[in-house]
Structure formats: structure tokens, C-alpha cells
Length: 189
Ligand SMILES: Cc1cc2nc3c(=O)[nH]c(=O)nc-3n(C[C@H](O)[C@H](O)[C@H](O)COP(=O)(O)O)c2cc1C
Image (cartoon, rainbow, N blue to C red; front, side, top):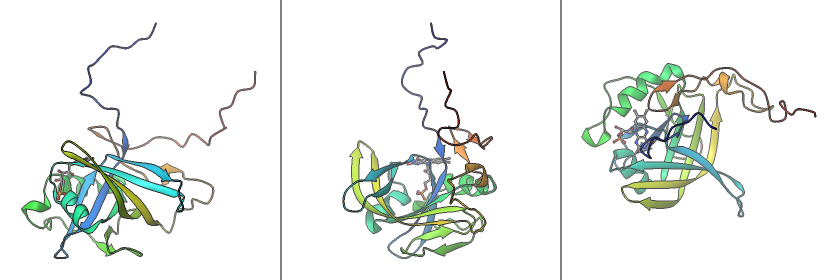
């Protein structure tokens, strides 16, 4: 017998690293907003690579920019970037440029997208397909470039602790220990 209770369907165990999505509007104004409905799938066609899947509800500036330009950056948030999440997440670019909190950004290496200098992992993405479900749009994006922090080595796989990501469940969390690789826990019987 399990030790669980039914809670209805209003809760979501949609626990993911937090990203700040960077876009330009048609006038070249920069905008960032936190988006945590971010996942991956893959394209096993001619390109055969990972794709980023990003979901946004409503008519936020980021969504309008992505629909217009078809380009975005996804900047992984480390714990020292939470002040940017709170600032960018509590203000909409629809109400003016978010310039009350200072931050540094650069243009992408491959695409015309703004990227946050503080981020240790940045995707540069181009939208390939949009799926609408009610008020939400889900963007399937080709990853055109990945930039990672110069001081982090991922040649033997990704040790997330080095990126110190913020994990979002409705509350902000940091992550704990690096527990090992696939196969480290196989038991012999
Ligand atoms: C931690 C956090 C996570 C968020 N995740 C999402 C998300 O996954 N999808 C979404 O549509 N909005 C999400 N939001 C809301 C937007 O970030 C927020 O509405 C923001 O003000 C939009 O700014 P913009 O209009 O400049 O794009 C999130 C906000 C916070 C603070």
C-alpha cells in the first residue's frame, strides 16, 4: 500500500532548471524574461540533434518577440542571477524596456539574439514549429549554438553542480550533490 493522497490536477511536478529567455523586438529593443517550461526533444531527421521546447502562455513580450523574429536565447540561471529572475519576471517588456536593474549582455555568436554575460550555459535557438494549446504556445526550436562558461569542462559529461542552477517548483531551489553517472548504481544479484 502506498503512502500517498490524491490532490486533484491543479499541481504540476514540472521541475526544471530556470532559464531567462532573451529576445529582440522589431525595433531592436532587448528583452529578457524567466521561463521555466523548458524541455528538450530531438530531431531525428536530416539534422539529428537536440531541440529545445519552450512553452509560454498569454501575450507576454517574449512570446510576441519570438513569434515575430523566430529567434531567442535561453540563458541558464545560476543562483547568483536570482535578482534578475525576480526583476525580469515581475515586469513585462510590454510596459517598457526593463532597464531599472543593470545587467550586461552580448549578441549571440551565431544568431542575432541577446545573451546574458552572467549565464554559464546559453542556447542560441531558431523556432522551427509552434503548437498552440488554448492560451499557450509551445515553440520547438533548433539549437544553433551552445555557449558554456570557459572554466567548465563537460568533456566527461555534465556535472550540474558546476553550473549552480536554480531549479523552480513555484519556489526557487539550488541543487545538492553530484551523485554519479548512469550505471554507477547497478546492483549484482
Ligand atoms: C520563476 C518564473 C518562471 C516563469 N515561467 C514561465 C513560463 O514557463 N512560461 C510563461 O509563459 N511565463 C513564465 N513566467 C512569467 C513571465 O516571466 C512573466 O510574465 C514576465 O513578466 C514576462 O515578461 P515579458 O512580457 O517581458 O516577456 C515565469 C515567471 C517567473 C518569475
